[in-house]
Image (tube, rainbow, N blue to C red; front, side, top):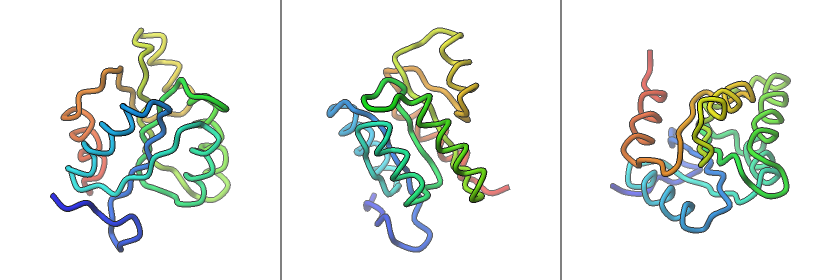
Length: 134
C-alpha cells in the first residue's frame, strides 16, 4: 500500500512516541503498510509538542521514555486538549504488562492499552476500529 502523505487532505495520521529505534522502525513499517501517515518522536516532551502542533487523530504512546514519561505526556495532551477541543485516541504501549499497569495507563488518560511486544495486526485492527465512522 502507498504511504500516506501527512499533509494530504483526509490523511489518517498517527503520531508514534517511542525512544527505541527498532520499535520506531517496526511501528512505521506496520502503520505505513496499513495506509497511515506516520510521524515519530523519541521523548515525551517532543511528543506533547508534536501532538499539540500537528493534532493527529491517533497517538501510539510508549510509557517508558526519556525527558517526560508517557503517563505525564498523556496528561499534558489531555489537559491542553480540553482547552482547545483536541481529543486524539491514545494507545498506551508498554513492556509493563500487569493489570495495575494497564489501569495506570487508562487512569492517565489513554483510551486503550497494548502490552509489548505489540502484535502489528492487533495494533492496526485497533486503530482501524477507532477510525470507523459511526
